[in-house]
Image 1 (cartoon, one colour):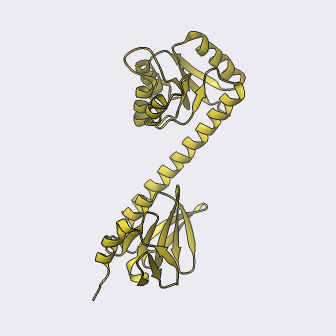
Image 2 (image 1 turned 90 degrees about the vertical axis):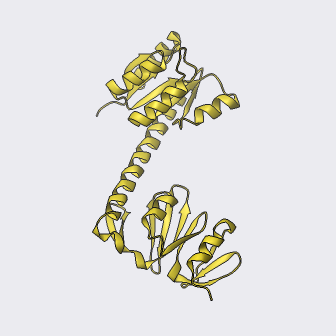
Amino acid sequence: MKKTSVLIVEDEVIIAKDLSLTLTKLDYNVAGHCVNGEEAIVLAEERQPDIILMDIMLKGNMTGIDAAKEIRQEFQIPVVFITAYSDEDTLRRANASTPFGYIVKPFKTNDLRATIETALNIAKEEQQLKKANELLYHLAKSENKKDSLFIKTDSRLVKLRIKDIVYVEALKDYVNMYTVDNKYIIRSTMKGIQDKLPADSFVRVHRSFIVAVDKVASIDHTKVILENDQIVPLGSLYKEQFLEKINMV
């Protein structure tokens, strides 16, 4: 089995050597070590490590935060920050680069392993979500886009007729798509699903809900009642757009 490769970006030599020895003991492969952001970008492209441990406060023109942003954008390699700083401003700037975790100096061996493995799992799930969204996008662009979607459930792709969808509910990184008889759990964002549904037939009525216009039975000031007696909230920010979609007399 191929070992996980780790690139170390740390300008304090003693800490870098300690990290390298600890990683080797933990059965990781050290892909290299560099001391500045510019070199980190070059090594990330050349060696394609599985993960990068990056000091936030590097010497030179490029901080670890800047290097992490570019590496994530160009190579989609997860970056975990090494830091001795926990002040609010540093963390705010670091979080803007969407890191996969933090290791605080002086680090502990168990914390190092746990942080790396958690970051790798998050990165794996992110890639799977990206692939699933790309697949759904291409399927939506296919000949079936006018009347159906393909929903990934377990290891299969199931064809779902758009006219059967009653409403969609957002739950963090997932959405639940409801028909009269079934519920489908999909790994996607709400916007990703909304973009795939025909705008003339579906409308967002709340931050977390999209409904099929032709499935609406009645409307209250704060809620929408659907034909299957399901009640969903009606958000004030979406009310005007929703009322424009229905045929009022």
